Length: 277
Image (cartoon, rainbow, N blue to C red; front, side, top):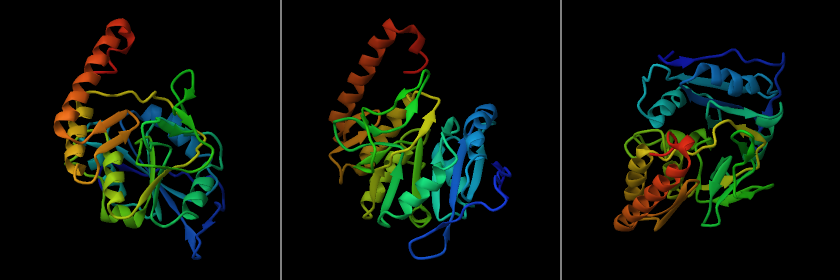
């Protein structure tokens, strides 16, 4: 077993519920998470995984010693040993609100076209974030538009992302375009689009402890790389943290304007000074 991989015995039922695929056979979902805080991991993700009633494979990548410098590197490491038909990449501070969550998600995505990737939050256009999850404290809706059915989008957020194992074996996360902890799912969605895959936000009853605001220097570094990589296909990239042109001069102006707004906002909200850089 590779270093940094921790396997938890999370069998909940003597005979876990098996989900049958459309073409026969039973499906398994691998739940992959890179974590840097074991207490948060146990209190949120592991606690809710213990309650799930369908079969799944937990793969938890230990980064408490900062062995990995990027999410792409860490999650690719975990995915390399995954056996599931679908791979779910999820943050350490996410909790599923009931025992049927994984069962519903696996049934939902396996019933959709084979060229589907999915997530808990995403953006299609300038209208804003599509989602049904809550985040922060006290919990508030994470999306600008609360959904109750699958919605097409251009990109998905990193909080929770699901894709077929066959696609991930072909693409994987790009650590060159995303050398830190941001935009690796956004980049994956744009690359998958070029291969004929389409992204959907699914209604999910989950809670994310973090409010998700983390636009630091690493975000802008990844943004410039992802924009350059996909400028031949996309004129605009829609993300949960903003709308970004792929034209280099326009993007630099948008980044400058966003950072200026953040600086002004921090001046009047001292408690947020560690959130934005």
